[in-house]
Amino acid sequence: MTEPDSPDAHAQSVLGPLTRAAVFLVATVDPGGEATVADALSGLAGLVRSVGSRVPTATLNCVAAIGSAAWDRLFDGPRPAELHVLPEFVGAVHRAPSTPGDLLFHIRAERLDVAFEFAKHLTRSLAGAVTVIEEIHGFTLFDERDLIGFVDGTENPVGPDRVAAALVDGADPGFRGGSYVIAQKYQHDLDGWDGLPVGEQERAIGRSKLDNIEMADDVKPSNSHIALNVIEEPDGTQRQILRHNMAFGAVGEKEFGTFFIGYAASPTVTELMLNHMFIGEPVGNYDRLLDFSTAVSGGLFFAPPAAFLAAPPTLDPAPSDAAAADSGESGPGDDGLSAGAASSLGIGSLKQ
Ligand code: HEM
Image (cartoon, rainbow, N blue to C red; front, side, top):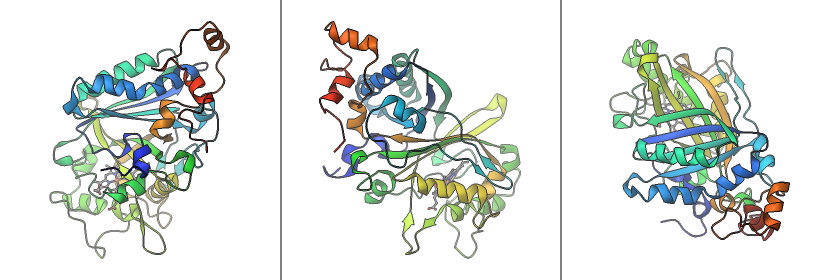
């Protein structure tokens, strides 16, 4: 159970378990679309209730996250301290691109139809204000495996470690319960990967394929995926992230992919992992998995705390909104307050 003073009490549904299905939407905010977007974000929790309560067993939830460039277009007041544009990671052999994206929606449910229904209503509420530039319908393969055939998510932190890994706490008190999200689309050369002897695949990951047992440190190659992704402080403390990778693909086009999504209390942890994977640790000792997995998109977003999203501190209303307010028309909130008005009254504002 969540303690009331835990950052989890303030978070969107970041810490939820891996579901059978997910829809990922990455969108850019069109010029002039800002007010519509802020309004839609404030209605997100209500929309989850509307769609989710039709099929409670599907455990629908949605995390909305905002990119660096869009933040100041959408919101007034302070920014999350570490929000920035994801850098590119350019190694001698492989490269992780940084691609456009103002909004990320991570929609999770036990059933794809429920996630899809939610995505339909969500995009309706954003119509004319955004352009969806990436849409992934992801699934969890049997045995919790990814499309390269390995169990994925084993070493995700649990309990208090999950909260500490994924959610902002005292370092940025105004955004307590928020989370930095890095999302990347990978495409696998599955013919090439499946052509490798299983032992070589296992050395690329650092775990056995069938039983999912981690290799001993003295046999695990230094360029294996998990050797490069275990980040330790000088005192031996491990810095972790929370991953919710999903498989996607289209067999007719030979597209076999993993959508990587990692939540972290600080983006520096995930960025260090990317640095190790692409540039190498030491430099040149890059992740062997990348010889069969190409990153084709990537972005950094911030998932604000739930209360921030419910009543975002929006910028001054556009003239047409102001005229509507003068004429006595009510705004979009359930209580008749526009998000901007709610913010000017200090409702939901996390500025301290
Ligand atoms: C092609 C995309 C990827 C695939 C298929 C993949 C697959 C896997 C698999 C099979 C494991 C071992 C089981 C587990 O603990 O989950 C793993 C572990 C892990 N991966 Fe990935 N991964 C991908 C991308 C990434 C990226 C981009 C990052 C970080 C930026 C990352 C970070 C990690 C971490 C932190 C672990 C756990 C290490 C440990 O504590 O043992 N992965 N991944």
